[in-house]
Length: 275
Image (cartoon, rainbow, N blue to C red; front, side, top):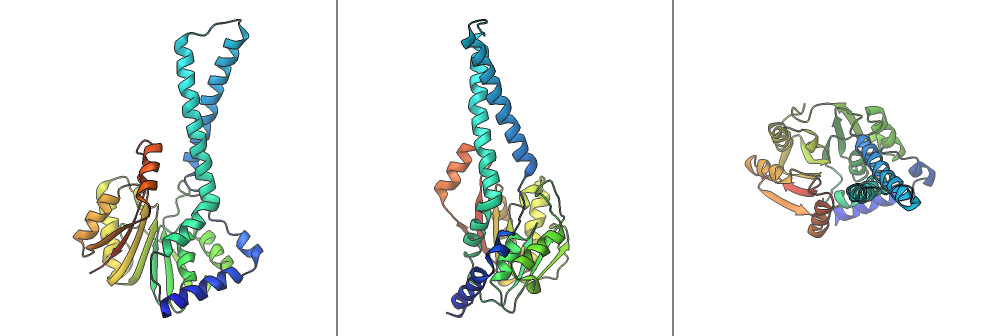
């Protein structure tokens, strides 16, 4: 009952805040270079098809059938790329705030937790967790790579914390997720969203998961959301004292996204508890 009341009170405080303060929240655009490249592919594909069709309809020149086939495929691909880029942009500006609430609601909060956000970026999960705390504390770490998130810097995370009125419960620092600068069993909760996959080598990802398991207290929980590699994460967690692993979210949605992206995105959310 205390846990539920604490979460409800924190949510009411947030919703009662000045509307314009909430409107100024800026958690950046995820993977801006990917979105840019998708839009470029969309323009090129649609433009090539359009030019080919105009030439064909003009009657002045009959393009080879192969050209029509290739530009037709380019048109289809371009539309797909454009839709994916538009979705990614929508998600960055609107969807990820909704996803944050769904994600953090997977945990039963007491308000006293010490929380670590691995790869906090501009503070999306960090500040969302801090909203659920009373006497607890939320720490975010990142290497502040602007290729992964526009305007990715410590000041942006702290600025958003002030706007969400949780600055007194938040701190950030620069640190590598493969070598966390914290003692063993330092945190009750560790969260991370769409970060660990940026370590391209499997041994590096394994080291990051081992570090998360190391800093968790016994009985502590890790909430890991990522776009791929979740099987590796689950395996490494289970080898490091975190045998209680549950996958959250819709299996149908995960499968659909994997099909649409030809396997590029295989998202999953893991809720892990340390023994």
